Length: 120
Image (cartoon, rainbow, N blue to C red):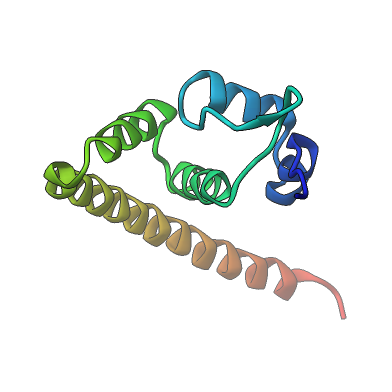
């Protein structure tokens, strides 16, 4: 059995080992199985990390993520609440993406204006 250590997982997700330890301490992960005291990340752990990083990138705070994961553990009776949380976050992310797109279009226009001023 191959042990998937914390260093390899951190590298895979482009985060620090300290971040993974923090997530575990804050009960966002885990508990992570250990082999001779060494963390051995399983497929479910990797999926959880991927989820955390995805929703964090979309603007969810660690507190919101923790709440989501806590209600996820409660089972099917929380499906409606989980769906609502995810839909709300998606809506907020879409607004931010539209704002960013608008800013990028403005920046592109300014670049063209400045390029037009350059001598040929």
